[in-house]
Image (cartoon, rainbow, N blue to C red):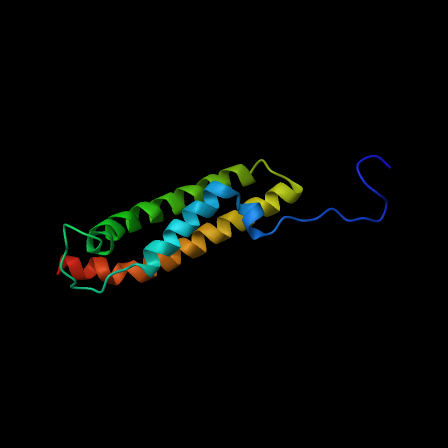
Amino acid sequence: MIGGEAGVAAEEPGLLGQLRPLRAALILGAIITILGKPAAGTPVVYAGWEMVSTLLIPVLAPLFFMLLMLDALMSRVWMSEAEGDEWKRLRLVFRVDVIVGLVLLAYWLPYFISLGR
C-alpha cells in the first residue's frame, strides 16, 4: 500500500500542532499577561524590572486581546471555505481564541476600570 501499512491509523496532531507555532505564541503571550497582571492601584515604575509588570504588561494586554479577536475573525472567514479536518481545526482555533480572549478580558477589565476612576 502506498503511503503506509494497512490498518495503521494516521497520527492526529495534538492541540499545539493544530494551533501551529505563531498562534501558540499569541496564546502564550496572552497567558503571560494574565499571570503578570499587577494589583489595581499599583503605582507605575519607570525603571528596572518592576517596569515590566507595572507598565509593559498593562500596555500589552489590550494588544493581545485585539490580536486574539482578529485571529478568531480570520479563522471564521477561513472556515467558510474549509471542509473536513481543516474545518474542524479552524473551529478549534476559533474556540480557543475566543475563550482565551474572554478570560483575558474578564481578568483585565477591573484593572482598566479602576484606572478610569
